[in-house]
Image 1 (tube, one colour):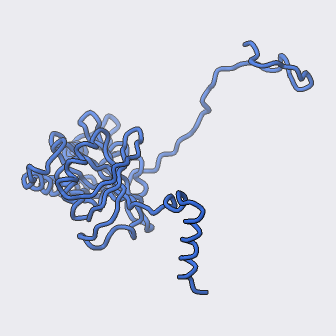
Image 2 (tube, rainbow, N blue to C red):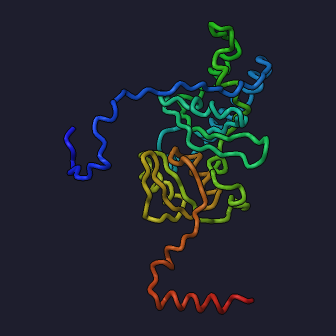
Length: 273
């Protein structure tokens, strides 16, 4: 290959001093965490019960929807608990072919607490987890293990999701009162900004017009209560994740020198030694 710039320093220019080789990935021994020890029949029975209850609650939620609010693909969000050792199952929770999506993962803050994952399911996929559990209970693989064991054995329980389920900030930042209005970062699923703005207007939720775009998410600021967000989640498929909006120093950084001095003097007047 021709040089792109002159090589006029011969004392540090090494010639014919190497060979080119194709990249080879180094051998790695991956130790996957062991699967939880389960009694197959009892675990399948308990999981079936929690899934059936969650799906039935979802059906009732869909039946009670206000047609003036409902937007997007009819479906619902489920919240699934996994043990800390079950992180490998996160990628198996949603089947893109059935238009399911893993939208939020809440990390535990206490030792021994579960990982909580939230998944959106269209109505057409409402039996997805029940079929997985039934195969786990009744069918063996060629190696004599329960089918779907890597997924089902790591699932602890399933329930219908709420706004709290999609909240991925620190637990202390979640409002205590359902009617308290605060500013949120609303992380939207891909291609759903228009529907979000429609349902936000219907629910009298105040929005900032500016949005931050990521490859599969759009983030907008919304002034809303958790009760409003619960209604939004029950009537739409737009939300992926919720966080509390954080204060930034951008306002003060944009002030002129004289204005910054005035604000500094005002602060000094309120500070006591």
